[in-house]
Image 1 (cartoon, rainbow, N blue to C red):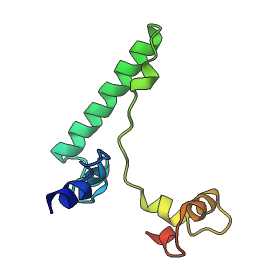
Image 2: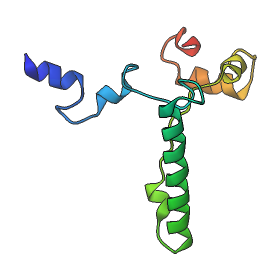
Image 3: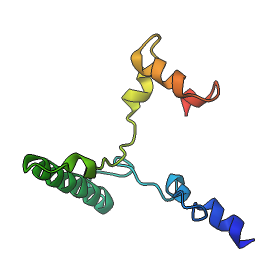
Image 4: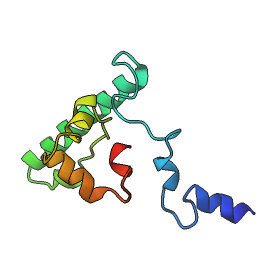
Length: 104
C-alpha cells in the first residue's frame, strides 16, 4: 500500500528516515577532495560556521543555528577501536547493539 511506502521513507509520520539511507546520505570524505559535492559541502559548512559566529558575536544565540556536516570516519579512527582499553573502543562498545556492531 502507499501508506507503507510513505512510512518507509519517513513521510508518515514525518521522521526523515530516508536521510539515513546510504544511497541518500552524504558525508564529508565520501568522495575525493576535488568532487563538486564535497567542495560545496565544505563551503556550506564554512559559511554556516562564519554566520553563526557572527551572530553570536553580535549578541544573538547563533549557536542555535550551527550545523555540522557528518564526516566519514577515517581508517585511523576505525583502527583505534581495535586497541584494547582505548577510549574509542569503550565508546564504540557502549553504543553497539550486537557483538558485531562495533566492526561496522
